[in-house]
Length: 96
Image (cartoon, rainbow, N blue to C red; front, side, top):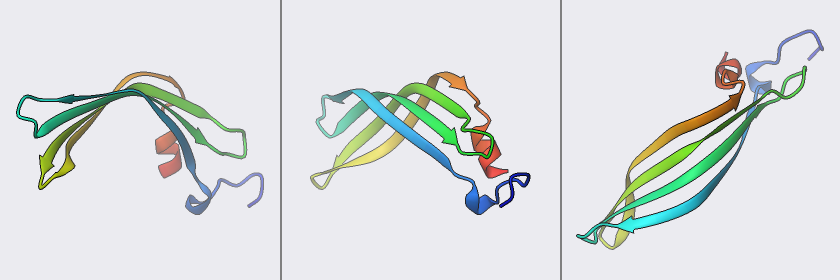
């Protein structure tokens, strides 16, 4: 690839480093349901020929779990973004 050409889709990559903190599990009264919550910070980096643009996103995850046949299964997952910093257009740039 020459310096003046854009990267091909095969060469475009977003790297994500994600950290979850403050994990807390709550068991409801029936004992067969649980809720797991965690705060997260994810830093996304898109490598380009002009540097490494960054987008950092933070918020909360909520997993709803059910116990079936002695195993805990994820029934629902919700990610709520609470804050962001940097270039939030990185996913579109990588896809485009």
